[in-house]
Length: 207
Length: 207
DNA sequence: GTCTATAATAGGATAGAC
DNA sequence: GTCTATCCTATTATAGAC
Image (cartoon, rainbow over all chains, first blue to last red; front, top):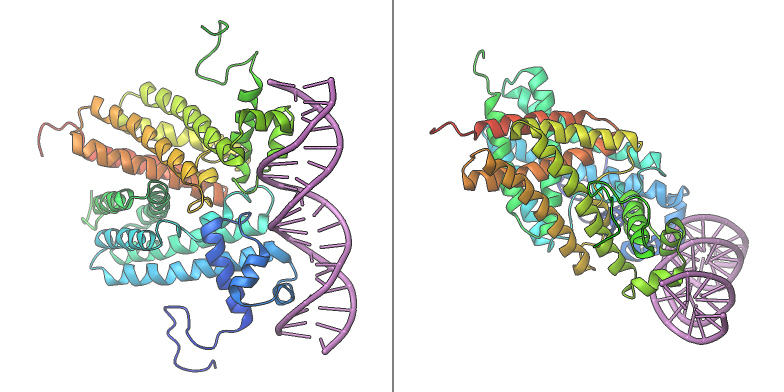
């Protein structure tokens, strides 16, 4: 068992190993600058580690590091998504809350910290299958969280699967649009529309 | 007036100047590899131009080139979007058609050619205001095309504005999800859901 | 406008001492 | 596991002949 008293919902505070610091730095920097825009030297500096340590833990180099960074970003957002989905009275309200949270994060970072997976995965489309698969897995995991919440609200199975797809797609796209236009509006609007869409599929006994 | 007989809906065929070839190559390569992943030498090679010509037309270097590339991608997609919006009987059907077209383009490029603006703009978030503004303008122009089509279908002004935001956001996000997961499903599902959403706001005289 | 050569720097990755 | 030094290549950008 790990050293006690850690908050599993946020990054554990005190004693964090070198490997973990490297992954966190890689995730944050690639979120901001993308895969090609982020150098390994910059990662090692930001992590307070030496270049030797980076290659010690990640002999596969930058690509292996990117896969780990995507995994880290996936877990971070999954934790937040879970909280938001569980904290709302119904899935429709949860969409509005999700959009608000994403908008908040963007605004507070001065519109530079968008989706941690997208910026890393985009641009490596053809050349790095490992990275593409990690990104696909991240999207699939987030979708499963939404799907489970919709099912819990007694939405039909096929409808819930389709809706989960569109929820993730729309939140991703709205975050992108918000980042590019430096405005919360795309996210807030998308949240309301997703809520409306979900209400169409509510447990209304039959059609 | 230009040399006659050009098809304005696709890239003009025969006599294309050096500057135009450079912009097209930049747009295509940055669409595939992102801003940082694309080198100026690669652009010049692909365009059949020399490095000297590139800096002759773009003394502002890579950033100025990226702005021109985003403008080119914006016009290209705007032309296709206009055709699809005008070709459908109603805006709801147009959404389904748009999604199909985007899915087709992705599949045919083996999932490497996504949105020409997103991949260029992402990752240059904080450092290049010119690029960010060009990307924001592209999104705004596309949104205006959707807005005009919704208005033409007699959807109320405020509703049309909001819907146009979500249409662009959702199509962008679904294209992203489709690219990452190498599947048409996110786009096809998003198209159907957007159609449903628009039908909620149809000209039903009153609520 | 086009070409070649080159400057100046930064990139990913490795070797080997400690 | 950590550190420093280094190799090799690629990058953006410029200079100047033609």
